[in-house]
Length: 457
Image (tube, rainbow, N blue to C red; front, top):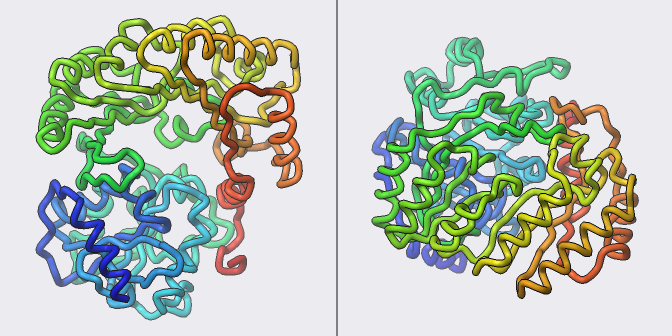
């Protein structure tokens, strides 16, 4: 226990908290991320909900992370998870579904709400749940679909009634809030709704112990214009929303008072009409301004120049496939010629690392193996001649609900391993990282199954 406390104290000691803790102590609440501190505090959605609970709702909320053999105690005051009367769980990734019953059991909490007493009340939301809540239907008392901020404000608007059955039934009539779905009730994405007020998510806590390391994150937009057939982003947010540039600049200025590292988050960063001005602001003010993954075909020389001036040493892009036919079929209409041109443009600059996402298993992927090898060799030649590096991150196609590829089969563990082995045999000379096969299997299963997770784990 003391070792765990010292570990948590070391984490909070290097954090910069950018909001005041709530003062409503009557509701004893914990916000849970069902994975590590590193993963949870790197996820902007978790930080935004934490900020909303404290700042907007005024609820003094502690954080809890699932780190297997560690003691289940909160970061802020070491209170045991079983002492909380309200548990809120953020689930952005299907891979973490299986951790939820485990973390509750570790804390001595009954995960099955049919056997659990009225406390703790368990509220679950997040993108993975929005796609498929069914595995957790007997764990959660309340589901939240889509943006959570306004729904949480509604749930906590009458805190004295929050455990009354009649109140919960009334909440279940509000779009985006659901209680006790039946086993055959098709809920999920179709239940979503979004914030009516224009809230711009941004970091509430800055820490060096995250994926981005002392970076202030800000969401500059949501939704995706590409609508690739394998991706849920444009299904969860069917409309592309670009945040107001003046508001973004004001928030960036506030973040820059805490750190010079600013991260711009959006599925389609370069579609933002003010992106040039935003990047120029960063360059002129000596900020290290970086972005989430970019559409390669939209990277022009001015963008590369500004990213250079903002201190970027790498750029991440999603190419999806070495097969031009497979890319075109799934909605990524970028010819090989453009990929090679943009890669050369990037690695001619001082940005010497190009990170590329690929998916194995797309339809038509096996067509034109010679063309795929030519693209790979062309990229390798550019990397060598420009003194740069191209790193590939490869995962298997996961056909998810609500996407046009939902009806495709999933290859299974052995076929994925064979496809990874075949890729390594055919394509050499550049760095390749393969996503764990079991993660792909969990994604597929939990994004589609109608089974109760309590019968599986």
